[in-house]
Image 1: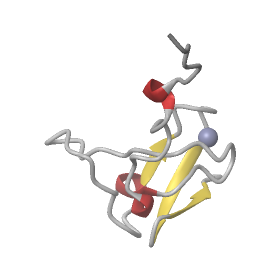
Image 2: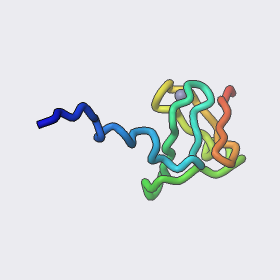
Image 3: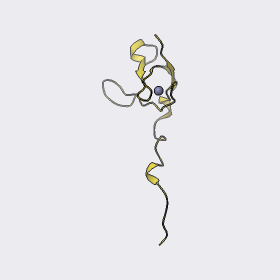
Image 4: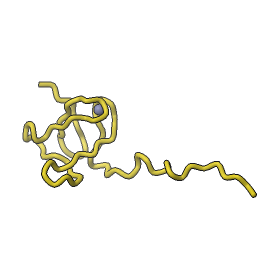
Length: 76
Ligand SMILES: [Zn+2]
């Protein structure tokens, strides 16, 4: 009997997130923001101060959503 050396369990890691949510501009981690009220995956609003910001759980940096899946580092 042949032995198969494959690991199908890890094939999809990193490829299942909607691209609209983008990546952290600091550490390039895939971001998965959630609505703070419903807990469902959702990008934050744009240009609404604290509501548009998030903390990256990869590097701990504060980042701000600027739309179209793009984020920028928040410094202020
Ligand atoms: Zn990060």
